[in-house]
Length: 154
Image (cartoon, rainbow, N blue to C red; front, side, top):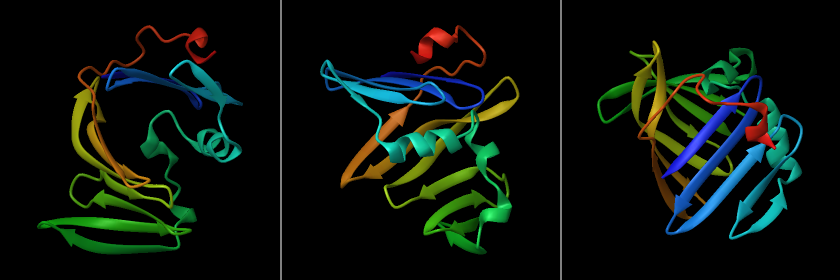
């Protein structure tokens, strides 16, 4: 169970309850922290750099000019465009244009389902493989522009 809040241009807060433990990750646009088991630690420089590059809606963060190659592939009978850049790969469904999978040096994330909210499609179920561990997240409720304030990112 968890909550994710975002605010333009790149502020982010995520709270998750996993096996009775609350995990919080916050980025205020310049710096951030992680909290787990009551221990608060600053985000490492690499994570801060990634958050600074992120967009409120991830699909807006894809800059086609940065990709060094575009290929086509077929996974389980579905056709995808595969965009590659610096060892990272992004798989977009050829028919819908939606992001299906993202592979980076740190993790592999697969979007299993999208839901439409206020005319926009959002990932509602994702599977991530990172550091040898599988994590599946499912959002039961996605709201746009509801109860998000600057205080959420402190």
